[in-house]
Amino acid sequence: MSGPVPRHIAIVMDGNRRWARQRHLPAIAGHRAGVETIRRTLRAARERGVEYLTLYSFSTENWSREPDEVSGLMALLEETIRRETASLIKDDVRLRVIGRLHDLTPALQKAIAGAVDATSVCKRGVMTLAFNYGGRAEIVDAVRAIVKDGIEPDQVDEAAIASRLYAPDHPDPDLLIRTGGELRVSNFLLWEVAYAEMWATSVLWPDFQVKDLDDALRSYADRERRFGR
Image (tube, one colour):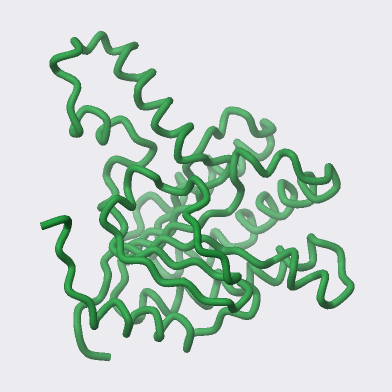
């Protein structure tokens, strides 16, 4: 594939529940199928030169879903992290998890911290899960940090805010992909995607294939990025 490759791709992984409903399955079955899509997408993105992949896994608004689905998602994250850590290390991919993690159970926090620590030396890519994440909440938390640090009002600028976001060492996303046919950002990386290129597909996340990723990359390569200029 010719043309520029995005250094950082962010994905709104929409459509897991609809995928399950179409098959008369419980919602958690769609989320489990979505985990398989994460695995192949991560590998394909790395092979194509993408360094950072950030995935919207659970939003601060998702707590309002049915209790069985929420508890199933929490259990699935813990199970997946414990199972996949060895594969991430083998592939030399670093795991990051961003969001209000203090709201999660101690067991889940421990599993996340263990996987993040175990992959911290990996150097061939970064996969970031946005879990219990909200773009507005992230900005609120950054402002709270500014207040706590005693920064004077005239010293507050974009750099002061950006340095206090959940992953200040990540470059801003170059490409935002959304599956499932919707055309909205859904409170995802509101600060960081200010100048990201966007690409949407009606394909539900569990059905998202490598060819769909390649379609997004081709679209990105054909664009001229102006950054507001």
